[in-house]
Length: 341
Image (tube, rainbow, N blue to C red):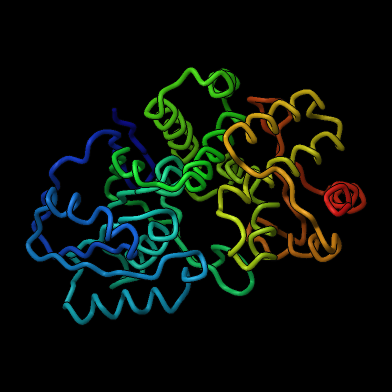
């Protein structure tokens, strides 16, 4: 199975199949983490032919998605005398993919990189579309660049060792895509009538459709942030240690649904339907907000906030999105207070 991403600056393929033999007549560095390396590095290196191969291992976890990790990776590349003809391979989940892409975008002003995602979330979301970046104390992915890979290879072999929580976190992004763009897809997920490969392919098709229209998130691509505006605050308030990204997004979707109901769009029945599907896939749907005012102020640290206005992505109904701005603070606070009881 193949899906093509076609942006103004680059066209590349997403291959959903067993990992093929990859031949690169150049210096290559695989950037990975200890867990993925320990489980799967031989699977990759047995299929990779390069002029010179290096493996750079970064610590595992969202809290290590920072300047220190990037600097370590860049220094390794300089030590090995990498040049502009060299390439990087992101081999891991979303954290590794985001950091590898960012390192590739700034090393010698840009070198090639390939995405080989090993988590479901990275396969259906973060490996596709060229968003790269790191976190800082102000929030998630606030430092980064739009930088497209040369190719994405999705091999479900890697999911055989994925913990159940990580798998569920990936399902959150699949469900998100369906709610925003494709009710028929959502209904099939609800019924459980699709294979894993079919769900991945449809999610990637929807992501590619969006990226092809709006590479740098000036319009429709912002719709992919459904659940993220609330979810990023949850991650920040819990120091990225309590919830996986997909888990925080799942809670964020439920919060966004409450806002949609408050604004008179999403029906109670469809909000409950979404919540049930999330819970069916072992995702959390509740979060205790200790300080609603503080939670509200955190929205303004989000990179999607512009002119001091918060932009919320909400479902008008399943399969149809709505972008809303200039919402009265009291309406948002009313939603937040529902989660503080």
